[in-house]
Length: 521
Image 1 (tube, rainbow, N blue to C red):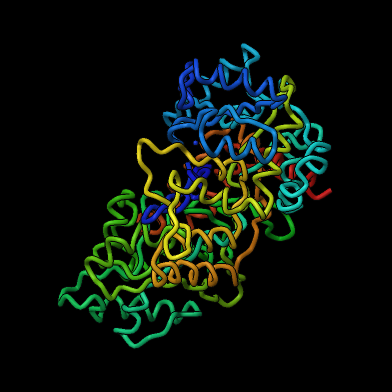
Image 2 (spheres, helix red, strand yellow):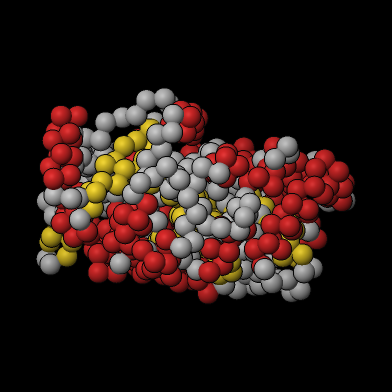
């Protein structure tokens, strides 16, 4: 499932003007920032002091890894008596990273903490991982208690023996929302819509009343991207569980079901087709590449769309405000549709962030290290690192410094793999001017009101073993797009459901429901 992956530098640490969603292998490792000689000397000194070193492995896209003489590593060692040896493998779309991990696995050289990206199922089948059920509550109680029980239940349900083998990357803030141009609404004398009928009326006004004020009929009421991406609001109105345009698993008629094959989806597609026919939905939606779509928003052309709350400035408003200084993007609660329960999805489990191999001799220290980063009193250090190296203090407030090639990567956000609303709010406030920060925080507040955690949160990719096309949503995307643009009638939806079921959907559904039953025990 192509859901946005992990977060670089605490949601890119939201460095001033840089709010990126996190993403995550090569037979050779890259250096950690200091020479081998310096590392050897530091290690020898630490051994003389009785300091244990926890080795961690990430991927090289993170940036320059800190060596043993780095101030942030020294600070951690001073507070915990534990040092960190950080190394990386190249990412290259995941291919090189997986290769590198396989080499380390074969050589029995896995570090104490490592990102298990791409080899999770292999590690479980080989029995290569240490169960963390006893270690977490004993040595990392803050981390253990901060992650919701439902998330741990999902992690346990993913393993063959019901134990915890992975520490997940968890988003505990309202990450997604429907967005709308408030300044366009003001131009057409309408309020933020709360119902389907009001939303359609707004889209028609956007189409007909020149809200961008350039005298041209170039406004696009709402838009999405190829494969039906990022127009989730049209589906969420009908209670269809989607993440970034991909149907996901939720409970329908009291059973866990792939949302694409529900009657809810049929009604949502019918609605989207009506919008497309009336040119209320961008007629180039299924041709829009990512940059083309974003450019339309940035060029003051699109009135309503769907995206991540913490990316509003970076992805859209930063350039849009140069075209239209009065642009005002606000969050929009999912419009109500009679007979359906709409919602904004909360997909809490982003990825499996950390695992510990059975071969580790420092598992307890690894847990203690994670606990240090999880404690609230260390949160400023996690977010801002070392003054002069990662941040500066202006007017009594810490401000992250722009990322540069010489700056060592601030690894705190990876070692505390939980992003809460409080954290993201604080980071936004410390990274943007008040007006911009408030715009994003307000959007999160709107998203939170109709937020709902998806029942299939954390479902393992192993349910798709043998059925890659179903995992890739290929059949759904073909039928959905052709029905919306009018090439096929809505009656073809029933054909899609039957074809999906007979081509492996029934077997995948059986596996998904077995996982869910295990999770709910």
